[in-house]
Amino acid sequence: MTTSVLTTVSTEQEAEMICGLLRSADIVCDHRTTQSGTKFGGAREVLVRPEDLEDARSLLPQAE
Image (tube, rainbow, N blue to C red; front, top):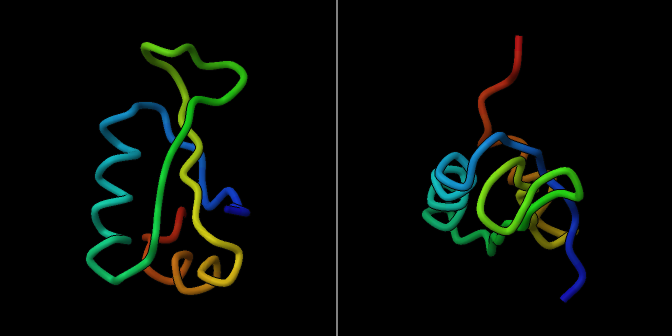
């Protein structure tokens, strides 16, 4: 499956929370460690299908 990076977060727990929100809106979501992260922790990239990227962005709170 082709994916696009929606956002990068600090922890796996944060990535799971975002994916939970997206899944509740029927958006397929996954996450993976970034190159700076490790298998057991560190930054995570939240991934969605390219066709869902705009809808997924609209669900996330805007950074100020």
